[in-house]
Length: 193
Ligand SMILES: [Zn+2]
Image (cartoon, rainbow, N blue to C red; front, side, top):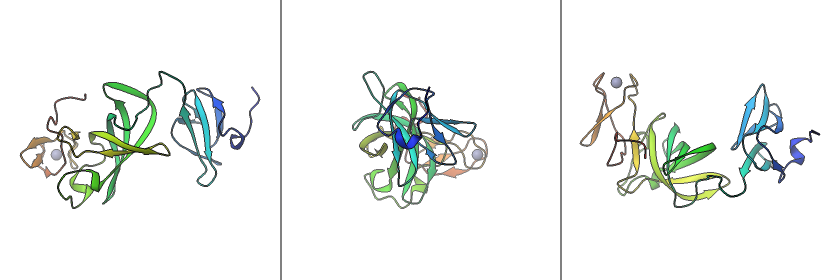
């Protein structure tokens, strides 16, 4: 196969395993994976190189490819938390597991009907949350958890890693007794669909 530089692949159809560039040149993003410093496509899709950020991504095309959409209910794992937002790696759409990497952002204003002081009271890295997609821009899914069926469905103790139990307003660690806070879904701890 003739390998063109990734910069020329923008908009081109690429196949799973197709080489897109190297990590010295580009930042791997949605729809890609890295092996031995080389960035490859994970999907059948269109390659996109953002020349400003050097991010290379692949966006699925065609029917039957499962992708979150505005209005979808998704499950994701919180990857990082800042005072006003949390990053979430979306892994499930409805009850179907997603192929590829889909990143979501939950902003503090979309968490709860009441005022929320800090995202650190909402979720922590490692938690699993159920959320609704309210918008999508540049492959970043903006999430919403204001409904009572939305929010954290599994949370882990910051100290010992045990699954927290939901008790009234607080989350309680059955192993070490630590008390934490979360914005939970009403069926917290009951399953992943
Ligand atoms: Zn604990």
